[in-house]
Image 1 (cartoon, rainbow, N blue to C red):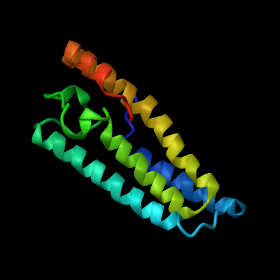
Image 2 (image 1 turned 60 degrees about the horizontal axis):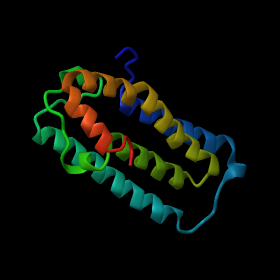
Image 3 (image 1 turned 180 degrees about the vertical axis):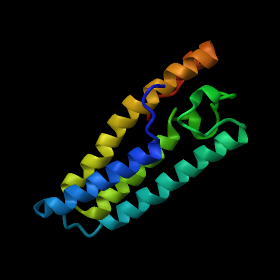
Image 4 (image 1 turned 135 degrees about the vertical axis):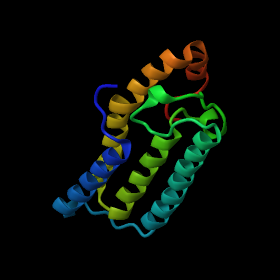
Length: 150
């Protein structure tokens, strides 16, 4: 992998972008009573997904370090990895979505959207290339069975 921007740093950057957009364009504010409830729900779901995915990696004794996928020793296909190939990034996207809703500004949703685009291009696709080289046909079959996001 060439460009190595830690996914947590990417998430933080897009959280700041959401905040900045909300602060710079207050005219795009949304006032809906239920937004905070949805934000709390997404926060809880995103956190649970992220934690469960990290625990799946730990149980399978393989690296969680997204900057060094070439160190992966096991192809994790159990737990949440049966439904999405990237539950950690999905969890981060949900957390960013919760943040955008909490900010109650229509433009804040740009942060999570850009995160999905960025993490796919800069992290997921290069990871897929490396995992394909390491796990060969097993990874190719896994990719056919399980979607990248949902």
